[in-house]
Image 1 (tube, rainbow, N blue to C red):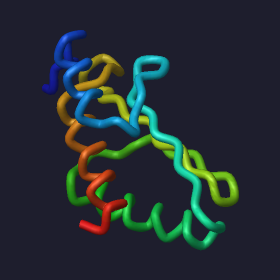
Image 2 (image 1 turned 180 degrees about the vertical axis):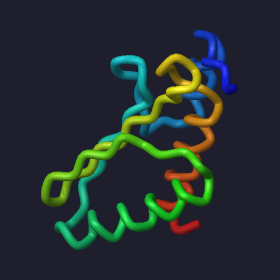
Image 3 (image 1 turned 90 degrees about the horizontal axis):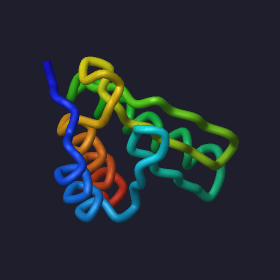
Length: 97
């Protein structure tokens, strides 16, 4: 079972993920795309990534805006290393990797 990160490890993780922030006990990133099609294309890539990694984000999509929230239910609904790794993978996907 994954363990929640302690405050020090969470601060270190956030320093490596400048586009993410901690909000309500979850990692959060807000994104804006040129249009709905761009947002949906991104969501498709995130869905495939989530299936491959076996970790599924909370996703909100309104037109061209997407919000991702990451927390691990098996870690008491807190942020774990699994969330940090997923956030880094999302950033890599956005960078074209």
